[in-house]
Image 1: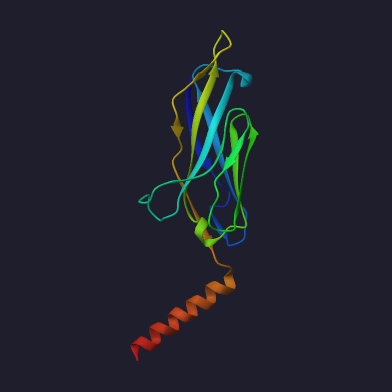
Image 2 (image 1 turned 90 degrees about the horizontal axis):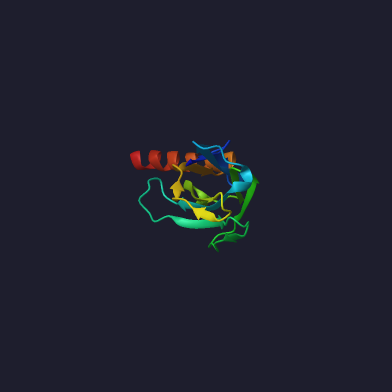
Length: 157
């Protein structure tokens, strides 16, 4: 079988404090496999920059046995990772902050049960990144726009 991974979000742009929901969706091509004959190690990474010029940061991982490990971070937003179906894994960022912006992607290691019953590790696959934007609330955006506009006017005098 050939495995692929993609990331989906209904809301790639959120207001600070909102919940960010990111789905890692796995597709299988080729041989039809019984869901009980597949398992996945899934890890989520973020690159907290506009480009992909910084090192990726491991956010959370879920192994094929269902054990979740979440990295400690320097800011308050929380992370949760869960398997929502055989081929979908949901990362949630609770109480998003400015620092949560950036490129998010998932990395997947498929495991396939052989006819003899042993588990075989397949090649790791990686999704393309999705860019998440965290905006301030509308009131603050207006205040900053007016402040910048005011500074521009002052510099012209």
